[in-house]
Length: 163
Image (cartoon, rainbow, N blue to C red; front, side, top):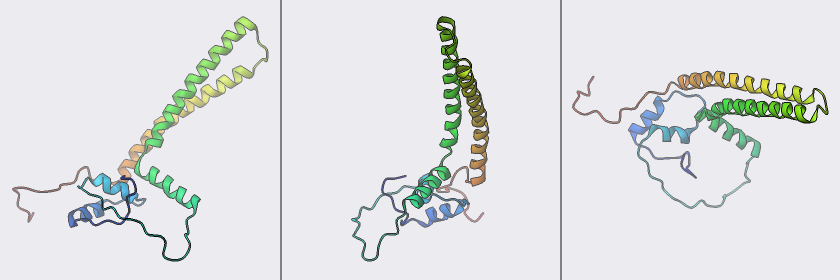
């Protein structure tokens, strides 16, 4: 998505028809135009001061648009779940190893706490790993539900256009 791009744009009929073929409900328009891949140029202009009235800007509503835009155009957040799971699992194994070494050399100063914490972290790690597998399936369902075409034909050469 180009920086400072607007939703208002002048497009060719071919680009307009290709955009209208996309059958999505939660649209992030700027990302969709980029996905189409048509050549584009920017037109720079200077934004004028507001002519009248006060801004209706609401930070939480704008943050909601940002979250919907990110989630509606990418399933990268879903790919972070197994990374979190693997990190938690490694952390729990390291903590459990540290607790065992400490218990062997220094005794057990506070019985049970370290073991409970390590096992809890380990279980959450496994839970997030399994959730990561589920999130991959959800990501594939997400891609299929958008029903985007596999490719767009920009031009046809040497074929009869009547068919």
